[in-house]
Length: 191
Image 1 (tube, rainbow, N blue to C red):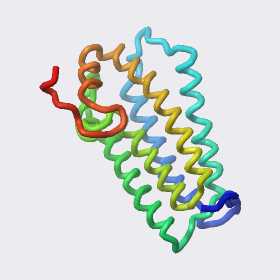
Image 2 (cartoon, rainbow, N blue to C red; image 1 turned 60 degrees about the horizontal axis):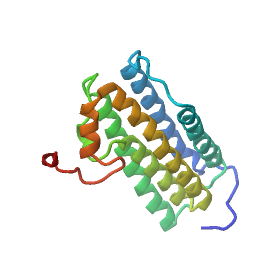
Image 3 (cartoon, rainbow, N blue to C red; image 1 turned 120 degrees about the horizontal axis):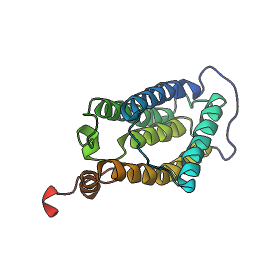
Image 4 (tube, helix red, strand yellow; image 1 turned 45 degrees about the horizontal axis):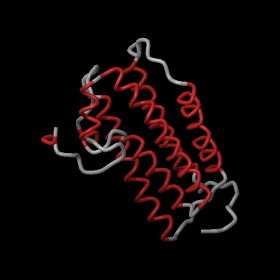
């Protein structure tokens, strides 16, 4: 990885990998909007939660714009390692999105990847970002991903507060049995 980040326009830049990320993000927004439309009741986000939600978009936009000028490290182990992580993250995100879209409306989602993580779409998106940063061997892109990870962790607290409001004890049980990010589900018998 270079100390000074590369900036050049080219056909084989990271923007190629950003396109599937944007497509998945578009479908995620559409599915979430369709699933959650008109169901927030009188739930209100706090001022800090609104700030965090808005702040999440800054590192995403900066990283996507940076990707236009970020060359892929063609023919290097960095590229192949990064593409494997990126592809795994993309498949992970698509499966999580399908789990979300096909779950019964009005119930806590506990099937598929949601058994291992309360935020599998975030996990997949972060894997895609990390893979892209490795494929380009860009420490700056990885740093933007770390900032995004911190903000998504804060954002997931607001989402969980909303889910507790909406689903009550069912979501609390889910929180107690499933890790926020990823891991082995806790035993259901420990309650």
